[in-house]
Image 1 (cartoon, one colour):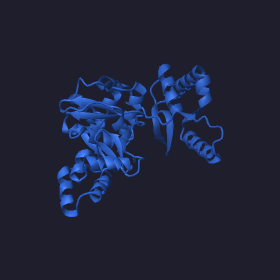
Image 2 (tube, helix red, strand yellow; image 1 turned 60 degrees about the vertical axis):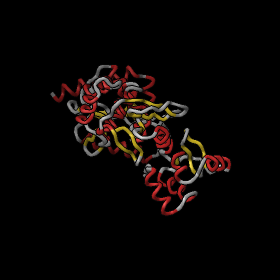
Image 3 (cartoon, one colour; image 1 turned 120 degrees about the vertical axis):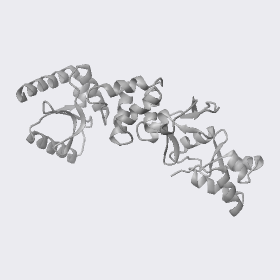
Image 4 (tube, helix red, strand yellow; image 1 turned 135 degrees about the vertical axis):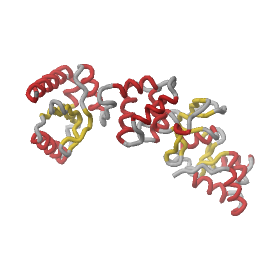
Length: 318
């Protein structure tokens, strides 16, 4: 858990324990091995001391004014916290960077996104700055001690930078992880009605049964096929008879499972799938299994099979 050390708190530590290495290590232990130039100065390390520490490789530049202490390999979260420290007060990780910290997206490869409220901070190599004049306190938060935009604001900003599928997946994941609720997300949109990303989030929330949660590339491809074929929207990764079903149409009692493309899956995995299919069938549902290769090579055939099964099951149950 990180903790940004205020200069006043550092001054009290120096007064009690002394300057130099002990103070530098104390800060680094709380800030994911990071320290800023102002903190170095309060710790008693001036320009000459910074230069010597850089030369002997006990300080490693991360961003302008921010250094990594000791080991040159940054720990998880150090890039994001370092970017926040580089922009100073009223800065927080946002957009894809915040989504990654919240577990809703993969980390950005090249740059850390930071939102800065009512102050100047320039984008630079490895750091992309977004400026806002104001930000409601409900749209600010923390993740493991790192200042970030709150989950609702994060998915709105993230949706402004990615396509529909990726935004939908992030929103569904945030709901599943109980990071936010739909009312909270709608409230955040009302606080920033003209914010880029709001229109896409509204469209996702407005679709039948809300955003869909998918766990693999095969499931995402299947969902694209279902929508392209204009089939009714299924529930995704939904509990049915004690097991999770990839795609489930409760009105038709129809389940579609997408198998991965690995032909060397261990036998226990096949046994689990077989047992799950037996349970779902015994509960009165029809189960269709689709392989990744079928989905890639025969999408029209797969869509037709699902459509006919849905229609047949619907007429039978009706």
